[in-house]
Length: 443
Ligand SMILES: Nc1ncnc2c1ncn2[C@@H]1O[C@H](COP(=O)(O)OP(=O)(O)OP(=O)(O)O)[C@@H](O)[C@H]1O
Ligand SMILES: [Mg+2]
Image 1: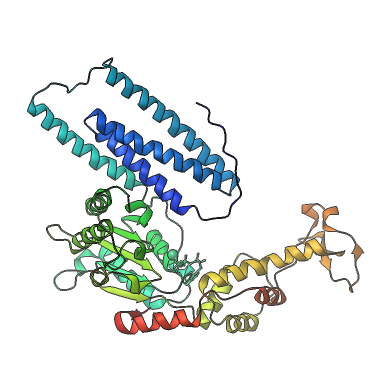
Image 2: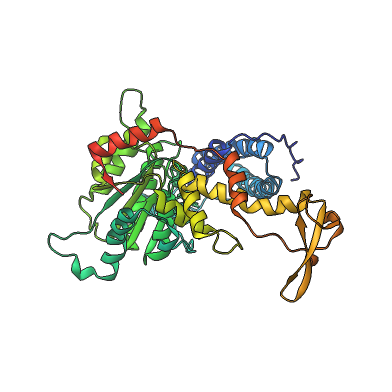
């Protein structure tokens, strides 16, 4: 069953929508195939999968990254082969070559089958969600996070203490059940959640709306329900929902039934009526807090503003990200850079640092003269400016072992600063501050 490799058109567009459609179609298809009791239901299941395959083909065509495209093609081929086998099996069923085990049996058998079906559905849904459980710790420590002290201590209070010292949390001192982190993009919300996953014991579920929203009626609710059931079974656990606004936007006129039901299911699950919710924390992150449904907002008892880093946090961030790189920067120069990066977000700063540490490599590439310097008792070539003394050479004439890359210096940062831009506008900040005054808490 060899399908010709689709012509790759290098388009840089975002394929995440296609991706979530493909995942949704496959999930629904598998579910129907595995649990459907009749040929008709199995056929419907295969139909979804075939639709998914078509979309996947489109996705492969649009995928810009060659390596990813190759992987996708492999997955596609495997899926296609499996689907063909299923189709053949179904045809045999229809022709009567294989007798259906349950045909013509009494009611009790049908009931048994139904029960089995329910069980399969549940395990199928759990399987779909098992990928959301973070098994490998992301290796982000609290100390990697600059500033945000209030947010860190609130999370530690909610995440670490109740697990480590459950006896402290009795009576009125109940642990937080819902924490929402909100703030401008790139300020470390997802990063903080990763630190929680690294430092917290227990099960960490990390889900996004692509995992939970399915196009098929009723399935999103079931997924959400299963998620909470799994979290309760494996407690203590943390459910982290990134970009929660895309799933729990305000219920209103323009909204369809499906998203209203998703929100309702969420409300029910977070409220925890009829089940013991101790040991389950829901952690949400968003950069559009005002878009959240008001009832959902209330379920997040603690709402923490994750602002842009202040001057100390910026200095710490720059220094910390240069920990493993040789630099000639002095304390004063670090302080100066922190002042110069006023208004930058954490991710703007990490981009700036990455750009600055590339400068020595650029210097190497463009140098026309080199001189020899001793490094660990060995003479190595390092680039010099054109007006300085040195041997005319290009770096292509040298081998890696003979080159000493210059240390990162203050000037490299000045060059990088000229090219870099802030990503958060003053207007946006104003909106966050207004919302914080009304509903939030400073982080
Ligand atoms: N406080 C911080 N300390 C250290 N690094 C930070 C901090 N904030 C952001 N960063 C850096 O910026 C990167 C992006 O941060 P992150 O993905 O957490 O942003 P976010 O707040 O989730 O943004 P978005 O709202 O767009 O999802 C991180 O990987 C990290 O390198
Ligand atoms: Mg994020």
